[in-house]
Length: 101
Image 1 (cartoon, one colour):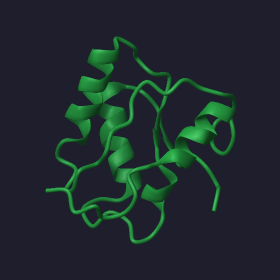
Image 2 (spheres, one colour):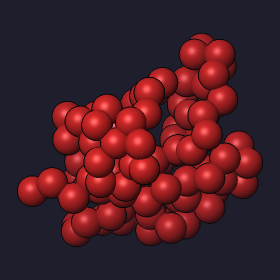
Image 3 (cartoon, one colour):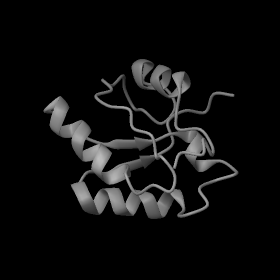
Image 4 (cartoon, one colour):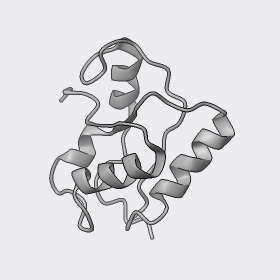
């Protein structure tokens, strides 16, 4: 059930990635863009499918800046989700993408 609770990421995340701004040390290539889809049960399978279909293992997975702001996920903190994803894929998860307003 997707309740559109919070922001799943949007153009500002993609802009920061392309320009190497915000939380990105350099311009990067985005290979996938996955929504949480409350309550998050599909997050790990969707990330796995994105990597399988793209045939690319990313150097890092970024959670959108919006995921870190209020109102926040009612099920788990961003840090808890990051740990779940890191454990599933052995890929570092970065919290946040940009600082744009």
